[in-house]
Amino acid sequence: MPLRAKVLNPTIGSRAQMSTSPVNETIKELPGDEARDVVFNNLYGLRTIELNRPEKYNALNASMIRKIVPRMVEWEKSDLANVIVMKGAGDKAFCAGGDVATLAQQNLEGPSGQRASAEFFALEYKLNHYIATYQKPYIAFMDGITMGGGVGLSIHAPFRIATERTVFAMPETTIGFFPDVGASFFLPRMDGAIGTYLALTSDRLTGANVFYSGVATHYLHSTSLPNLESRLAELRFKDYDSMEKRLGIIEMTIEEYATGLPPKEPILLGGELRRAIDRCFSKQTVPDIVLALQEEQGPTKAWAEKTLHTLFQRSPTAVHVALTQMQVGRDWSISETFQREYEIAAKFMQHPDFVEGVTARLSKESPAPIPKWQPANLKDIHPDDKIDAPFFQTASGVPTLKLLTARDYDEYPYKAMGVPTEKDVQRVVQDSRRTPQEVVEYFVTSKGGRQGISTIVEEILNRKTTIDADGRALWDSEEAQ
Image 1: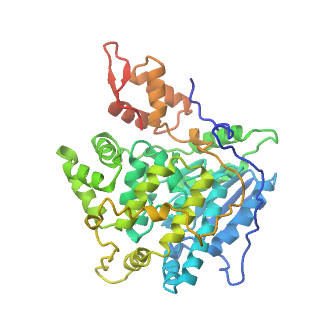
Image 2 (image 1 turned 135 degrees about the vertical axis):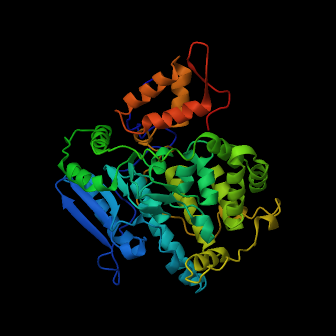
Image 3 (image 1 turned 60 degrees about the vertical axis):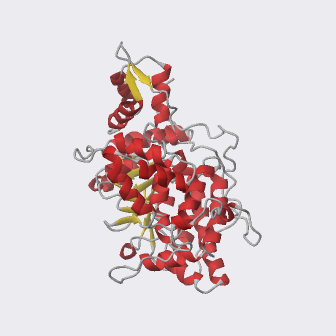
C-alpha cells in the first residue's frame, strides 16, 4: 500500500471535522493591548504573522492572541489568501512560550487573579485548536527557541520547519506546570516513549534532531526562509484544488530550498539511547520509571543517572500529572484535548508549585534559588497518594471551554506530511518482502526525495528489524509503539 504523502480524509475516525467557519464567539483587541506585538503582511497569496516581541523572545500574551485570531478568521474566509506563515521576529526565538511571569503575578492576588490566569489559557487554547483545525495551508517557521506556547503555535501545523537555530522543548515540569497547548494530543502519538520522555524531563531537541524526531516535518537553513516566503507568495491554486493537492504543492516547494542536513548532527533519540527511553519511560507509574532508570547499565547508564537527577529537580506534582496525561491523552480527540487541558491548567493556577517554579526560574539571583515544591520530592509521594487524580476530575467552578469551531478529529488529518513513523515502516516491512535498502528507497520515493528520510528510516530498520537468509528485513517480535 503506497504511503505517498497525502492528507487523510478528515472524516476518518469516530469524530469528523465539522463546520467551515468560527461559530462560537468573536475575539478582538481590547483597549490597552500593545500596538505592534504582532505584525501582519500580505504578499500576493501569502499571509504572514510575525510575533514581534524579540526582546522577550516573542513570548505569547493575550494581546497577541487577540490580534492573531480575527486575522486568521478573515484569511480563512478569503479566496485571496492561499498560504499562512507563522514566524517570530529576530534571530533568537520563534516563540519561547507564554508570558508566565504575568500569570504567576496574577496568581499571587488570590482567586480573582487565578481566574484571570485561567482566562489566558482559555484564550490560548482556542487559538491552538483553531490552528489545529484550520482549513487553509498553515506553515510554522520554528526558527530559534520554540517552547511552551510557541509549540502550541507550531506543533499542530501541517508543515513545521526546523532550522539550525531551533531549540524545542516542553519545559513545563520545570515551573510546576504540565505540558499543555495540545501536547496531550501530539506527544503520546510520537514513536515509542519519546513523548513521555520529553514531557516528564523537559529535555531539549535542537536543530536537525527536531526534524529527526518528527516534531518538525522539514529542515531548512535559516537563510533559506526569506526565499521560501517569496516562493510561497507566488503559488497559485485553482478554486477546485483540494486541500490534499495544495499541501502537496507546498510540500514540494519547501523541499526546493533544502540544502542538506548537518553531517555532524546524528540522530539523538535513536539506537541504544532510544531503546533505553522506551524501556524506562513506557512504565505505567513514576516509581517504576525511577526504578527502571536506576537499573540501566552499560552505555546508557550515564544517561539514566543524568535523567534521574533531572526528574528529581522537577515539580513532583507536575511529573505525576504529565505521566497520566501522556497515558490518557492518546484517547482524546483534538477538541477534547484542549477542553481537558483547560481544566487541568485552571487547577494548576491554584497550586503553589506554579508560582514557586516561575519565580525561581525567572530569578536574577546567582545561583537561582531551588524551588520549594509541595510535595518537595518524588520520594515523598506514596503510590496510594494519587496526587495526579484531582487534576483529571471535572470540578465545579471551572467553566467549560467553548472552542471557536466545532471541528474535531481523532488523528491529525495531515500527519502523512510528516516523516515516516515506526508504524509506517513496520507496515511496509510486514506487507512485503523487501531488503532494507528497498524499504529505504520506497520511503524516499514516496516522500518525493525529501532530505533526511533515508536517515530516519535506516535508524528504525537498524533498531527494529533483523535480516533473514535472503537478505530481507524482518520486523522484530515487539510491537511498534
